[in-house]
Image (cartoon, rainbow, N blue to C red; front, top):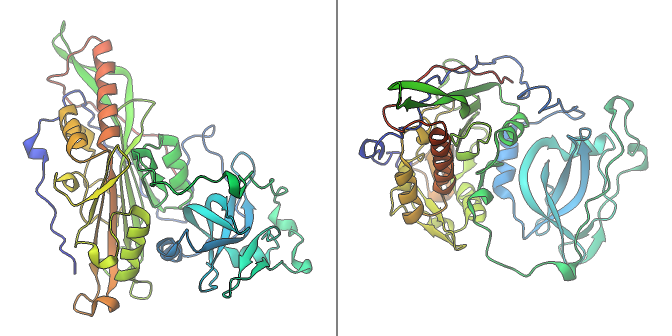
Length: 448
């Protein structure tokens, strides 16, 4: 079992961010019935038609850990939804083993010099490629694959009898394939982009807008969903009284989950998300993400598989045995990644999270000063990623250990500092001072 002790809290060593005073933190009621999509309002998010059943999200998580951009080839694609909410999902095959990955993957197709097509993966969906093929929706023409001997062959075509789209699917014609650069136009290998807005956790990226996070969580079909909002307030120097900033409400945390059933505490399949936003009303950006997954014994993933997946995605280490018990990645502005927690960055949002939609960490923007964020930026980097997990059979040989729960978190001091400075400007433009602010109540509206 990994060491689960959390680092000493830094919050007691720093002053509370005085310009932020929200106190409502009210949450929407849990939706324990069938899964429903997130809906901010009728104008911002529209219901996307579903034409395929959704599978087990743990299969999606396992596939995410296996993703290998060097060996995964596109063998076909299918489209779901209608404009402007139409999405293309790519079906992959491992060029080495010949194994077909079960679920469609969102991403950007990348042509290769040998004529095959790879994929810059974004996230693994819950839609099965086999279901798409049975429905006659899988398009395989135009994709070349490699045999184990290295010979190039055309991707297997769907039988003619299956190519007709079922009447009940009611899908529009597939959109044209996105334009792809020729092999000669592809850039040479370069260090990975590591700016804060390139870091993602389970498909949710640092720097995303509020609506982008809502849309990403909508696709995950979470049964429980909370939003909490806060209001910027300040001390009026003339009246010497606390005033709420006009139009100063912002969403500070979104938490969602497919939680354990009542009474279940272990050996369960469950998942939770917690996303914290910058305190700039109407211009909120995701500055911290916490994603926790719990496995039942039947779905537990091997520790080596998890560790290898972390290295592929976040870099910094060569082999799984190089990872410490609680790894930390620090992404620098110069394009490099450093490892280790020499600046105590994981104290901000690191540690093993809960499997329920809770805001256990609270919004760090409400507990930190801009100077704190600047210090983290100077000593840690643009973004900090941490991971913690526990094993169901900690005494087993390393190759046989099974992970029963893990948490990956990401935090950007750069985005947090930008948000804190933006809120300060709003307060100052209203003629207020940044000291002596007190909480004010507020309410939340968006629902699933």
